[in-house]
Length: 102
Image (cartoon, rainbow, N blue to C red):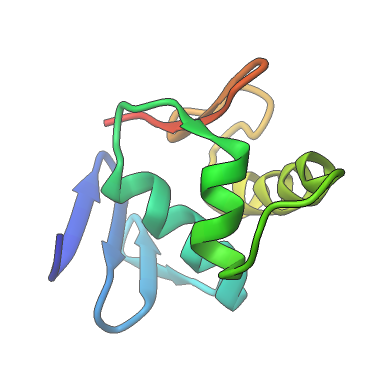
């Protein structure tokens, strides 16, 4: 996908590497943006942790990457979700990884 992705109040401008919630820009780290974009480009699909790690970090997944991803996803949810404990955009798929909900 190019251009932008819009879901509810979230707009992801892929080419500009910017995101907006209710028309307000939200600043993300490079990794947070890459995680969000990858999940959004694979919307409604349970993306395995290993696949997400390889796509974002551009290196082979190693033991313990689940904790690293969980930390980034938690920070990302705190920035984009109204209620990070009940996410409307990024869902945890237990035992697999994450799903972006469209």
